[in-house]
Image (cartoon, rainbow, N blue to C red; front, side, top):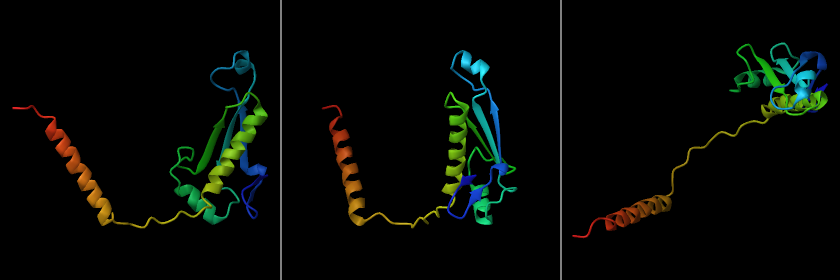
Amino acid sequence: MLHISSHVIIPDSEIDIHAMRSQGAGGQNVNKVSSAIHLQFDIAASSLPPFYKEELLKLKDHRISQEGVITIKAQQYRSQEQNREDALTRLQNIIQSVAIPRKKRRATKPTKSSQNRRIESKKKQGRLKALRGSIE
């Protein structure tokens, strides 16, 4: 079971985990042991509350497919169990990230003094460049 919050829990049956051979360096261990974990989680078929489902599907994340399936590949560690924990933690972080409401951006104007500082710095830079010219 994956605990998202005090009220939201994902049963293990909804998370599809497969072991496969890892890529990259690791010597003979890479060729022999299936230590990488391929995790898939179908958002639509899950028991998550509707709010979580909607927010997850709105996310612009390369790990979420068009069909609404989260795919995570964990192969950072040499042991299968550590990679499994890493994949589950990453899934948990993705789901928990949508529970935090985003603050609306309030449009602001630059202050008069900040505008004056900007113009003065531009004038100073212009005078400096003018002094670099050839002397006649």
